[in-house]
Image (tube, rainbow, N blue to C red; front, top):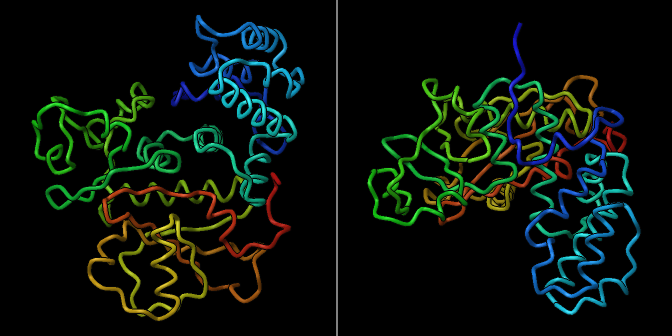
Length: 338
């Protein structure tokens, strides 16, 4: 009998309860985790107003907070942190599940700090992938909430976690580190069949690079993440396959998975020719086909939707999973978690 292995322990998924329609429900323990964050724990020199509010919420994390309680804090940075955290808490508590909160943010263009949004995406993905035992899919899912630094190494197109890349500072000791412009005595491991079993114990380190070369497992794994994401949040069944290039294709509908891909898609839609430098920015292309009973707008029924991912000129890839919610040609009635 197989045993489910855990991953992304630090995201707090274990602090949440299963909610309606398979979503995640906020608990007091989850809210207390926000109060334990370094920016929320009062420092030794904090004023009594800040200390009192922190004590109160540790005992009752859902207790309403008056604006005057935050305004009474002496430190301006503390006031800003508390305003943002309470606004976020109150917003989450208005919704039955985290998924419902995320859909509301995306569909209504609501502004919250990117830290909160990325954490929310990670938590939803942790729920979506709870039964996944493929480290390649899990590593690809990291790209939904963590920017990636891209490089070509020995003919392979690799993605490495940007935050990890920025922390490496000593002399380069490997060709890959040099190519990425990094400086560290540590080697960078590329996820492979040989080391895939180590993913579970290091999933919170985000220290494995992913090979996104066409025809290899990385791009296919990202397609699987997209499939699960769309099914979970929109209740729509799709089939996705990676394709090598967009040539002689009529774009009935397309979605850019990041801002750079959206610009490239717009150019293709308008019939513009892409120069080689722009084509080199394209990281992945997918053909998405909706199930026959999917609730989609009529003019795209039966036609494929194309998804594009592309890096910036400085080799950064910042996927925007919200584009799948707002950009796919599904009817407003689609979605079981809205």
